Amino acid sequence: MIRNQDIVVIGIQAWDIEIGSNCKNIAAEFAKHNRVLYVNPPLDRASLKREHDTEKIQKRIRIKNGDSPDLVKLDDNLWNLYPKTMTESINWIPFHTLFKFLNKRNNRIFAKDIQSAIDRLQFKDVLIFNDSSMFLGFHLKELLKAKGYAYYMRDYLIRVPYWKRHGERMEPQLIEKADTVVNNSALYAEYGAKYNPKSFMVGQGCDVSLFNDEDGKIVVPKEFTDIPSPVLGYVGYLTSMRLDIALLEYLAQKRKDWSIVLVGPEDEDFRNSLLHEMDNVYFLGSKDPKELPAYVKGFDIAMNPQVVNDWTIGNYPRKIDEYLAMGKPTLATRTKAMEMFQDHVYLGSSKEEYLELVEKALRENSKERMAERIAFAKSHTWENNVKAIYEAIKKSA
Image (cartoon, rainbow, N blue to C red):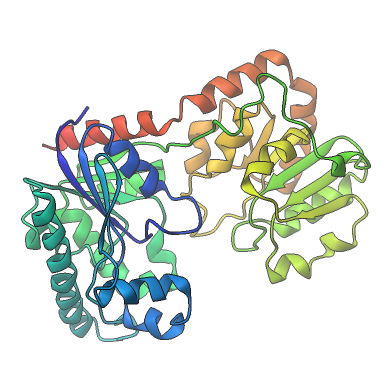
C-alpha cells in the first residue's frame, strides 16, 4: 500500500468523458489513501475548431477565459484540473524532428498549468501516473521534477494510425525513462520489458457490483419471450474493428436452432452484414448501461467473438468479468490477454472450435461452475488492481 503520497494522474481521457474509464477508476482508488490531482488533456486547436459549438468545448473556453474555475474538488482527496492553456495540434507534421521540437513546447505549456495546480494544492514530491499519454506526458517527469513516474499501458496505441506516426519512435523512449511500467495484459508487459526491465503486468480492475444476481432479483427483459433457447449473446458496441462478423454468420448458419442475440449500437459493417437476413439472429439495439445485467441474464452463453488484430490482441475486455459475475458460461477468442481467464472461460481459435465450445459449455454448466465464475470475477476489483500497481512501484524504487 502507498499512503500519504501526492499523485498527479494524466492521461488521454478527461474526467468528464461520457464513457467508463480505467484511469478514472484508478485515480479514485488512489484517492482513498493519497491526495490525487487528475489532469484532463488540454484543449488543442484542432478540437477547438472541430467541436467549437459542443458544451464540452464551450466549457473549456469558459475556463480558458477565466469565467469558470480550472481546478475542481471532486472528493476529499481528489481534484480535477482543466488546463487553461491551449496546445497546438501537431500530429499531422510528417517530420519527426520538427514534431519532437513542437511537442516539447506543448509539454512545457501543459506542465506550467499542472505546476500551478500543484502549487495551489501544496503537493510535494509528486508521483506521476501517466495513462498512455505518450506525447503530452513525454517530458513531464523532468519538467515537474517528479519523485516517481509510472507509465500505464492498456491499449496497443502505436498500432492506431493517430499514435503510430510518431508513437512508434517515442513510446519506447518514454517506457525506457519511466521509473515503473504497469500493464493490464501479458502482451503489453512483454512489450514494455523490451525497453524497461521494470515492466509489470498488474491485471485489470472492474466494478461488477451492477452485475450481481446472487439474490435472483434481476428480471430478464420481455424481448426474450419469443427468442428460442439456447441463446448466445453479446453486449457492447457492434463494430467490425473488434468483432468477427464472419464468425457470427458461421455460427448462425451452422446451428439454426441456436439464437444469437446482439445488444448494442452497430457500425456500418454490422448494419450491412448478412446477420440481418438471418432468422435466428436478433439485434436488440442500444440499452442503458444499467439495463445490461438483465440482458446478460437472458443469455445461455455469453460471448466476446473478437477478431484478432492489433487493436484487440492485447486488450483486457471488461465485459468478460461482467459476464462471469453473472455466472454465465462465457466463450471468447483466444488471445494472449485472455490466457489469464482460461480456467473460467472457453477460449476458441477457429470457427469450428467455437461451434464445439458452445456445445461443451451448454453441456458442462452447473451451479458449482457458476459459483466459481462469480468468485473469480469478484477478485478483479479496482482495490486489488491498485494494490498490484503499488507493488510494482515499490519494486521499482
